[in-house]
Image (cartoon, rainbow, N blue to C red):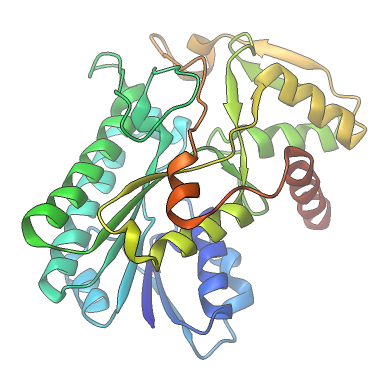
Amino acid sequence: MRILVTGGAGFIGSHLSERLINDGHIVTVIDNFSTGRASNLKNLTSSNNFTLVEGSILDTIVLNSLIKEADYVFHLAAAVGVFNIVNNPLDSLLTNIRGTENVLEAAHTTKTPVFLTSSSEVYGKNISDSLKESDDRILGSPVTLRWSYSEAKAIDESLAYAYFVEKQLETRIVRFFNTVGPRQLGAYGMVVPRFVKAALTNEPITIYGDGNQTRCFAHVYDVVDAVLTIAFADNTIGQVINIGNDFEISINGLAKKIIDETGSKSDIVYVPYDEAYGEGFEDMERRVPNIDLISQLVGWKPKRDLSTMIADISVEMKKST
């Protein structure tokens, strides 16, 4: 197939693009390199089936021409990272909402299927034991910019679903829960690479808040497996599906595990949320995915554990130093 990947130079997008090329597809990536890196795609530059376009999904002329040539669109382009969202809220909202609207409108014109990547952020402060796709969203005030990413992703989902219902556009929506692995940067607040980088240099590991908040982490290789399985299954059209690992760990536990597994001498230090992100910042105490639906629909379950994730990130960071 001829496949367009928006945001394909990013962390997840680059891994997905590699897999698509390896599976025999013809892949075009569009990325504006705001958070993605051309170096993430260095393994593909020699392939005759790969094209990299530097551009924005806000540029409808470029986007429309690319979608017109595609058989399928994976839409991953988005403003990401807590620091990025809080510091650049307007650009983030425009990219995440208007950009998605542009993709869906162009795809509808050509009847091109769209795979929309959303986020567990849509659940907000819902701390249920196991978050199902149908569970309620619980959010803070709209003027607490921490929640603008959640709002934007929810609107993206509503747009994609409305195109499916009203215009019969083939759409699929997935929600990622804390995907980690090689190529992920800690610069935008991504906790695992940030902790691993500090541990490898024996520098202090900084935890925002008290560290009792819990998260679940999935390896990017497992996530790409899930994406491809969902993307080409007939029973996933019009569905919203969680992708994640349901093994839960506190941020304190994560820091200690990374110190142990890297043999680090790092100390753990704590920084209040207000000091790290600005006054009024809110975080969620817990986020655990229910992955029953993906298992029922396509039989997917995560295979790689947290130790493997830490090891894979550590190996890549050691190579780059």
